[in-house]
Amino acid sequence: MALDCVFCKIASGELAAPIVFEDDRSVAFLDHRPLFPGHCLLIPRAHFETMGDLPASLIEPLFATARTLCLAMEEGLGSEGSFLAVNNRVSQSVPHLHIHVVPRRKKDGLKGFFWPRGKYRDESDMEAVRVCLRTAVDRLKQSGA
Image: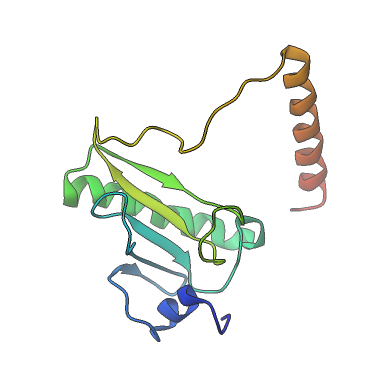
């Protein structure tokens, strides 16, 4: 637990929050500034700042819970779908890993991604980026990351 982390305080029960789900590994609660009613934040109980910090053993249980929240939004709120998002450092308002799980409806006004999109200069530019990422992924996989 990080002493000054608001999400750690919610996970420990020190701070009250509108809890939607909790188990020994994670807690989901309603966002206090929702995109739409039912917008939840799902956090691991332990303090991990980014997805890269999350141990591999917690990835499946955390995303299994995210899946359950998606289904619950459809069943409980009648949403037509959901949107999941994770910020790593940039735009991360609280430096504790959290997954936004947002109920969606067709024509709800949310337009895909929230940032401007660009294009690659050309095919060779795209291929250079692909090779850089592929090489990094291979290196990380070989190191056990």
